[in-house]
Amino acid sequence: MRPSTLRLRGISEAFPNEISVDFDALGPGLIAIVGENGAGKSTLIGSIFAALFRQLPGQKRSLYDFATHPQPEIDLTFSVNGARFRSLLKLDPKARQMESYLFNADGVPLTNGKKEPFEEMVRKYVGTPEFFLSSIFSSQKRTGNFLSLDRSERKELFIRELLGLDRLRLIAAAARDKAEEAAKSTIDLEGQAKSLRELVNAGAEDPAEVEAQLQDLSSRLERLEAERRAVQERFLEFQSADANRKPLMAEVETLRQRLRKVDDEITEAKHQLARDESLLSGKKDLADLTERGDALRTRIEERELSAELRRSTVRSGVESGFQTLGGLG
Image (cartoon, rainbow, N blue to C red; front, side, top):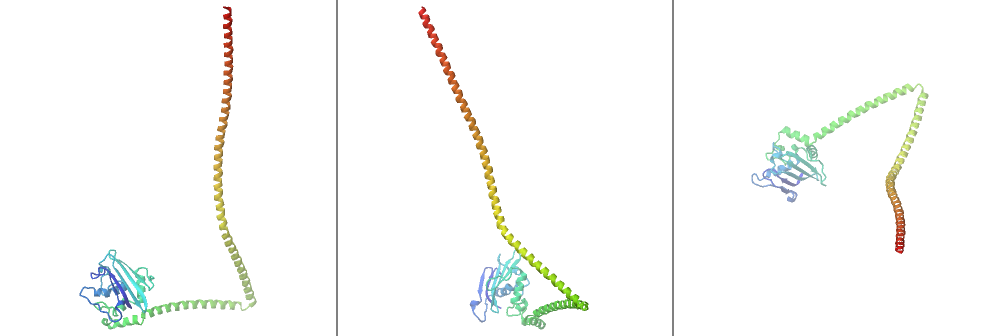
């Protein structure tokens, strides 16, 4: 495992703000980190361990207890056997929650931020924390360093990590499961073979009857197969009919809508017709009233004319009387 870049923010008093270290830019060879006590040398190296195992090496306290920023982060890019990865830890000290992500070289997330998937993927590509600490990435107190371990601990670490004993145990357990499945399959096959032998022995006295039964079964199978094909063809026909029915139903629905619209227009036309007939009836009544008024005016004029004639006659009679009276005088 080779670190490439490391970005820290809010981890211990040494790094309250964001800092970045580009190990690739330093080139190959031995790298020495020099600084005064409390400058953050151990925290810087320990953050590589924390980026992978969510804990500073050699510390019993949680990583939250070292937070000096509202949103601390540890961002590490590294390579394992030429494959490049990125680990990102996002901490919430107030809620004491942590999101841990692992990305591949293309930036595709390999985990969802949860602890268990992250630890599983790190164990797959990097190994266990014990194996990591036994390498040069040891804590300041050399806790877990291979040379500081007891002989039995070295042996256990060597067998488990370097020889892959855990993997061999998993393979052995998987092999046992496969063997049990094979044994069960063998027992089932033996039972089937026994049943077949019993059938053969039972039918050995009359081969013709067995052959007739086989032919009958074959005929039934053919009939069932023919029925299956017919049902399948019928099903396909129904599918085709249903596919054709859908546009027709859509067209029917369109026609229904148009019909409802026409019905509405007809109803509105009937209402308008009733209103027009009412208006027309009113106009007819008005015409009759006009005719009656004209007739009445005619009668009034006739009456006035008759009265005027009568007045003229009376005036003429009066004048004639006056003339007669004058002649007498």
